[in-house]
Length: 185
Image (cartoon, rainbow, N blue to C red):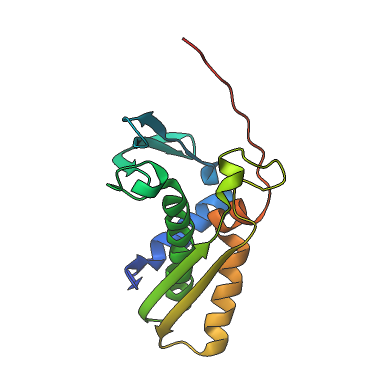
């Protein structure tokens, strides 16, 4: 049986359905492993390398760099986004894929999608000035503005699916076990 190449919103829906079928047939094909390496670059600056990732036990090359810095008010030079902004960008980008792919799979053509995310944290926690103040966000708020040829019910369904299936939404909305090892020398 011949499959026709079908792209909606820049997403190859046949490839996406094929990936889902392969993972359904062999769950090992759906194991994705991501890793990064971050090095201090002086002051509040750091540089993160994304060299490879793994899917289904196969390593794939990447080759990206992500720079971070703090604003001058937080002792940085302000030459790159800070880690909080990168965290929010990672959340938004992950959810964005869900909105675009979800619409594509329903045959909904999008005109635009924008996600605006914000959060406030109390620097007393980060600076260790108060043991009663958490160092991070207690709430992250976001707004999704979406336009396309789908109905309000279609977009609500996609929205609910994104909140159910987005890896970074999951990572930020629930506790994730952290296992760190310090190597000195």
